[in-house]
Image 1 (tube, rainbow, N blue to C red):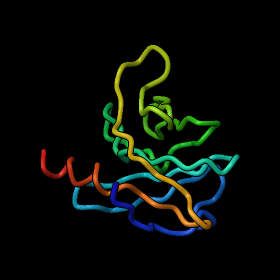
Image 2 (cartoon, rainbow, N blue to C red):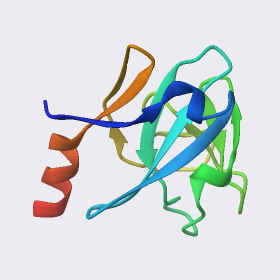
Image 3 (tube, rainbow, N blue to C red):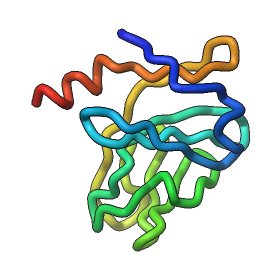
Length: 110
């Protein structure tokens, strides 16, 4: 894996998100109330809503446009709807958030 430092954990409010713009598109990086961090494609597959502007609850985010609920862990839609978004490995080291760029590179190449 190839890790990119994208900022401090404290740069993202609890139950909030930030967007990382990449050549592969925008990635939403979420922080839960318990300081877990997840990274997903920022675009909802339903209507293209920005997931980074959604409501974070537990380890889920609700799309701000049509209330689809996504697992931050798997990217899968929860409930009766069908769909998913790509997830990206992240880790925290010394209070810094690191994003795996290898998976993003594969997305550009596809």
